[in-house]
Figure (cartoon, rainbow, N blue to C red):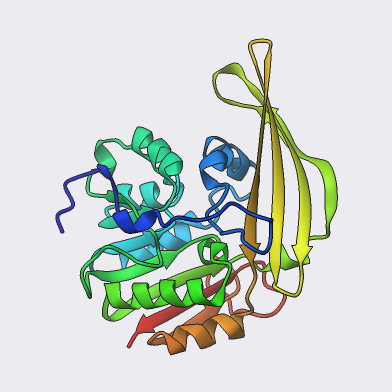
Length: 278
């Protein structure tokens, strides 16, 4: 596939029909992300920042070929990688996220390409990539074993033999206590606006699902608008994830506990798994 295009394309497989929730029984991990798109960068600038970007830039720059990013969203990770010369293809299910990414593209990222697609059924040829990355808990939006198996199998098919797969898990989601309507963040927004995030948390500990009920209040030029949506994540242990990787055809190279490459332990702030396609 050529890399000259920066067009956001749609994949017919990315829109299977689904029924909207009951929060835990029928909820799918992609629900809420189109609504979250206008607030994603604002929130992450106040929480995550860009701590993970230098790590992924360093690893991806050594890939020796094209790199696939799962869940590229608004380009928080993929655009810095592309500007560093990484030949990158990003995929995301959310059209609203990709629309924001498209608006941020410039000449320095033209060697990148972005596709609307479902990570459970990637629309690429076999062995098309030297590396794939799943930053910042992307795989935790897959809420069932079946969906995770489909995604890992799809990534394995898209990677060349020996290709590296980097996964970043957010370990503390399952430990969040439940609460109702707490103000989590507030501050200035673009074009003179102001945002307040009011959040509630629900846990389904048997299924290891955490749902964040997001209520954004937007004030701009004397007007007030409210936006409500939910995001649900699943937590798996490192052992559970490595077992699924091996089943999907990977061999685990390393498990890291931070973005500087230190070894993993149960108390690590992040869980990073690097595995190779056998």
